[in-house]
Image (cartoon, rainbow, N blue to C red; front, top):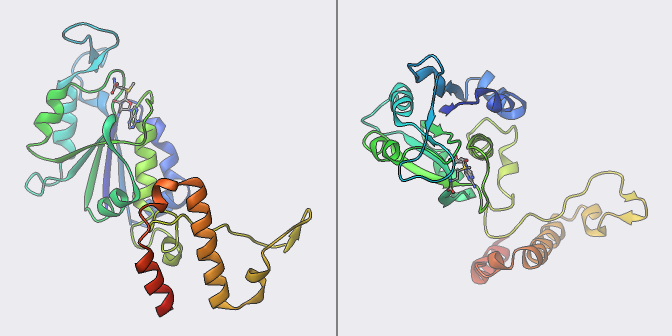
Length: 242
Ligand code: SAM
């Protein structure tokens, strides 16, 4: 997958070179390009922002550098690659979006700063991209870079080969309705706290049942909104077939 991130702070994206995402790039599974928006300015101050029409606080990112930067990263205008515009006014990012976006050949991310990007850039981009404004939650950040790191990490780990053991992706929180069960490692006893007996026994059926019960308890306690979506009949059917 090709990933292009346009930002005025390319250094912010450096952590993407670390750990599993960095290794995936080294292994050729990801082609990660960080592009400096200021490289598309034509004045000596490399200016990317100006005052808002209509007045008000703050500055707005100018259309000209954005237009040129986006033209430069579009690998195939006919295919209309996905352009993700991080914004607190976007649809809230979730695991299903990560699954869908992991299927794409190219993702472009446009990191806003200040009060955001001139709206005409977003309108214009729709001619050559499938534009998706995305929020990572109902709060306001200073810029899109941190949001992009969150999304890239969530998406890239779903690409085959990025995570060593693909089984790890199967029982995770948000892979279906239920959150993941609590996990434990050695020693079996630590500061007077014991690992649940069932997990030490080696009976796979009992372990699976125990974990499922813990998933339900945890989801009900922490995310009652999710437990309401649980398809109990499907769960019972799956348990009968196991
Ligand atoms: N004036 C904008 C508003 O009220 O919707 C907020 C602009 S914010 C200070 C600057 C940039 O940070 C945005 O253009 C966006 O790229 C990014 N940003 C802020 N909060 C975000 C969030 N919750 N999710 C994704 N991106 C966010």
